[in-house]
Image (cartoon, rainbow, N blue to C red):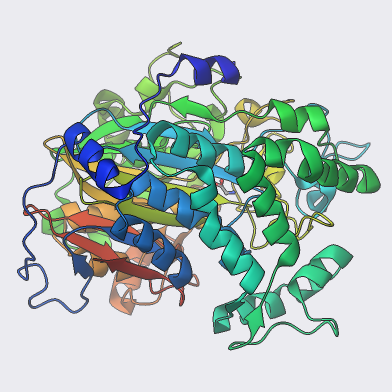
Length: 588
Ligand code: GLY
């Protein structure tokens, strides 16, 4: 089925090798933004200032990835060229979430106003996977099995997904998009503090695996320190094989052999056939409308777009601007709407190649109106009273995010992951990259929460070849058919609510993109029945929420959203999330 979808989809790749020709081809094919004029209006009087530029903007969670992607734009490449280059670079500079051993989703919205497209390169369950593979003989879930063993790994999709994006919409040969990553892996890079701290924190989990220890720690077992140069020769060789042989250089040949041997040594399930058969899929993004803005976000097998649109639809009926940013009233309505959406998620969402998902119903205005009527202004509804709703009938028909906009107004929003920080913690011996533990995003047993506390049902049970449900929400907001906001975040179950709040901060509260990104966040996911808040929500507000019956807990930072906003005059504003010290937004 995947293959069919892939083949049915028409190629819209833009070709042309020289930058001059490339620029000419693109400018003929794509609508040019209005002549960019740097506008200061949005910056004046603001506490936080976004990066601003006229010709291109990149926001990623690692400065080195931002830099190499920006170079691609400066040399005449388009947003997809830059995004794919960033994706491979992050696999080197940020191994805790950047990856070639995982999967993700890319949303592409051209500057010509044509319908946005989504590339689904989510991992798939190996062909040998079974519904009860994470349960013991008595039917109890064995949590570590789906998180920290070779059975935790889904068939990786990143290499195929990034290559497909380039083939359909890029102008760079794959080899050129890989070149900066190969250089960073071979020559090494100076590690930032965050890199060193991450390895220290995950030491116990990672050093269980000799190949992980040898790849990411020094010979004496200590972590690389800030300021030291870290090289990854095996990863460089793995990336070089992709550069030399294309996608086959990962899914067949030497790298595939190393993955399969790794599986066979440790009781994993991924076979050479699973790798050979992996195909990314072109999907139609979920589309909603919020206060006159068009919201495009990721469709299943991610739940992200569906529930962002559902929550926005519910909130559209409340005067959020008047109630104020992070006031008790606003947070109350947001939490009540989030509860309803996450309850529906637990029941209805799964891989649409395997199960029917009532997408139109869940994202319809009429269903939102019905749900809104159950929300009381002065009282929290206990989670135990909230059940999945009845949307209209079925129709057949630690993650990282980066956003790129080029001078033609083309926008890319990409979120990819290996699930936890460092995924399963297992490095493919000889290949130098970490394997995902994405199988934990399946429902190991109906009603038993996954690592993010998310409950799933039959729609998300393990099946061979199926994609596990995700919350990743690469999102592009348009106004009058013009790209306006490009955004998305890591954060597990909190991805949906993080992305939602940046959209609301911009649309409802008129914030510039940096202020919208920095603002304190809240989260509710139905179960556990609590509002999580970041530092920065006042005690008065918390007291008011508690008086309505909410349980409020302070959480550590939520998400790391990397966003770009396009001003009416075409100026690009980049908002990198300070919650990750290596985040950066740069333009030219
Ligand atoms: N692994 C987190 C997600 O895909 O939602």
